[in-house]
Length: 280
Image: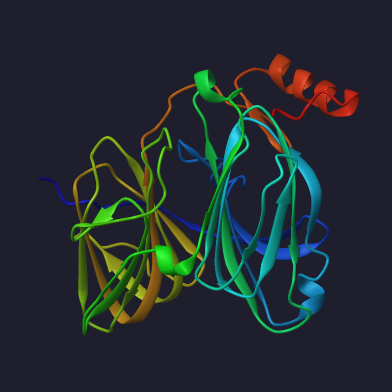
C-alpha cells in the first residue's frame, strides 16, 4: 500500500454568498475549479452578526448535493419538498437537489459565533434528474472515536469499525472531522479509487513523508491517490478529511445549477422561471 503525499496546497479566498454571508472558499475558485466529484467548499465563520444574519434566502439547485456541517451557531433549513430542520452545533444536513429543489438556510441565532462548512458534491448524469432527498443528521447520530491523542467524528465513511450515518450517496463519500493533539500522528486508509483532500481548520500539520510548504489555517490540501494517509500535528490541530469516487463526466455550471451540457443549464433556468422547476 502506498503512502499518500501532498499534490497541491490551495489558500482559501475571502468572498460572500447568499444575502451577503462572509465566507472563505477553497474549491470553486480560479486556483482550484473542482476536485471530482467535489464542486465547492465554503467555510463560514464570524462572531459579528452582520457577517451572517442575512443568511441564504430561498434559491434553487439542480444536479448537485449540498452538505452543511455546523460547528457553532444554528440555521434553519426549509425546502420545496416540505423538509424542515434546524441545524445546530455538530449537526449535518445532506441535501440531494437532483432534478430540482428550492431551499433556504437562515440563521435562528441573532448573535454569537457562527462557524461551519458547506460542500457541493456533483452527481452522475444518470441521477441528476432524480427526485430530491434530504438527510437531517443530529449530532448524537454521528459516531465518535476518542482517546488521549485524538477525537474523530465520522460523518460519512468508516473508521475503527464505526460507520458514518450518511447513506445512499453515489460517489461513496468519506467525511471525517479530526482533532489531533500536538506531536501525535493520525493514520487513515483512503481507497485508491477516490479523490481526496484535507481542509485545515486550525493548527499546523504535516502530511506524508515528503517535504512540502507549511500548512496554515484555511489551507486546502489536494492529496495524491494512494491508500495510507499519515498526518502529524505540529501543534493541536483540527482538520477535515473528505474523499469521493470521481464521476469523470463533463461539467457545465450555471450558478446554483450543475449539469453536463450548456443546453441542460439553459433548460434549468427556463424551468425555474416558468414555474416547472421543482421535482416532487
